[in-house]
Length: 399
Image 1 (cartoon, helix red, strand yellow):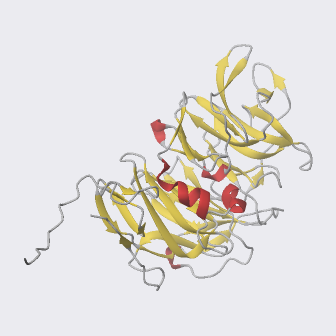
Image 2 (cartoon, helix red, strand yellow):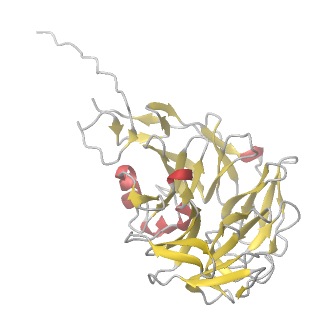
Image 3 (cartoon, helix red, strand yellow):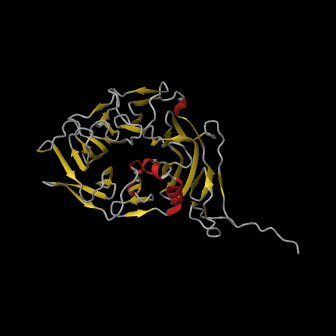
């Protein structure tokens, strides 16, 4: 009897990547996928990459450590900055160059993981290069300068209800107090411990666990201190006490400080010390589905796990984590999670990135995805190829 070729049924509610998938399990997911975007069950090939603003002049002070945006509320415009070990440069959209706005040279290390925050009352960006220099500010013009009042060196930084918080601090840049968090409501004026009617500066020792403070981030009126072995919720209460704190019910800490991002009302997402992704909603910490566990625990070298970078494309509600798949030095692939639809995907690039940022040019623009190699800044999801290299886009579905 002649056989008849059966046409497979349509796949509905396709959910993208799941590296745990077993054969003949669920045809709505796949473990074989690269370089595609997945949203609401629709799959399409990713776009390419090109040098940002067509700038092909390479950075001489390498590597590029961090991309930062300074949002100037008076003009509703955003400045794009990038930090290297000794320099800070600003993208000049009129001349398509990176202008040097460093001022006094930085003394950063090539492995630094810089952090930054906006001080809204000063309309200034504040940043640290993981404690090599004292924290600096940039106001939108001129050069970067050290914050006033001789702030301590710090490895973590965040602005919270009128206070600038610095975590894992040092008076001399050599000996750090890894459990200490200092908060000043006059961050460009004084960092001396005081409590009067005009200025309040306080230091807290977050000794609920022995692990160091690695990152700080605000969610829903709470400053979350992410430590190596715990997460501490710090809340402003006013009155004599001013602040209280609670250790969240979570047995792990944060592994990669630059994996930490805000997902709006959903909370924070981060890579924990077990090399899995979690979301902290302020009350509880829940793991993401283990869809990308193989990439994080088997493909990503253990030595690189603490140095992964991330960004959020808020226009597409997507968290993007850069990781090393087959690269020699930096991050040559991304894992992407749509936090509205709970879909995952995976991408690989011919360029190794060391920093990334979801950048919004102005109030009415969509976010663009930027990533820097050691010496160039690129825009992702643009054009059709990777700066002249064809992109291999595919996914498999087992029927």
